[in-house]
Image (cartoon, rainbow over all chains, first blue to last red; front, side, top):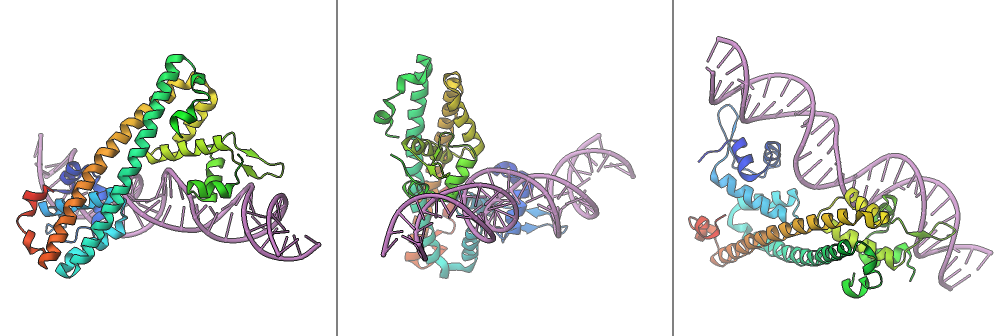
Length: 136
Length: 136
DNA sequence: AAATAACATAAAGTTAACTTGAGGTTTATG
DNA sequence: CATAAACCTCAAGTTAACTTTATGTTATTT
């Protein structure tokens, strides 16, 4: 299944310049072109882009993603590096998960704080109690 | 309890320039100074910084955090805005949580993929099966 | 076939959130 | 009391990941 750059942009919710930028940075080494130079994406390029998005979501910089893509091209001799990289990403993601859970708790407390203040018409109802309740 | 900028930096894992930057941006409107101009943080400033860190963790830009800080200074007439803001942050955080969970799943699959490939000595064991298993 | 939409490149611009550098004052320590 | 550590300001620099602009080509539609 071949796709144009515009189709891929819509499918993956990326902009066309972003896709060109990824290509220029070497993130899509097997991306084909027509004779006239127009990019033709196939399903395997889409898979690559999805992995890129996943790695980006873990906070990995483009240049590190590029290293991973290069390792993939180098074959089985880089399996260990790639495994190690994903183990590290796993640790990062788990830390992110913990952090966002704590953030959610604080936000939920604040929602309650303002909901009750709003009902009371004043924030004063919380003065003196905040520290005990929120541990903020 | 008064704290110096260096103490606060250590306690909250921020740099001293970052704290000065927050101050300059108006995020710490009640921060006091000694006669000679040295910043003196109290517990309420620490609370403010913790809320700032929480909002930052939700992806909120500094200028929006600044608006919130300004609302706080304006008193009860801004309670509704502040409540609405936290409801919005709650939605954002929940979306982040969903996304990071999906990312974690993909990363875990990749860990398994490379672990087994490594054991087999080659990635070939996965060729043809990846799509069925990973739904990537 | 003409017009429009979609594609291309290259280089410069943008943005946020700091960080760094230069130069100077204040406070704490031996 | 001298010297080192910690603080100060202001302006300029950094960085990543795009985005925008300018200009031109290719493909599709009427």
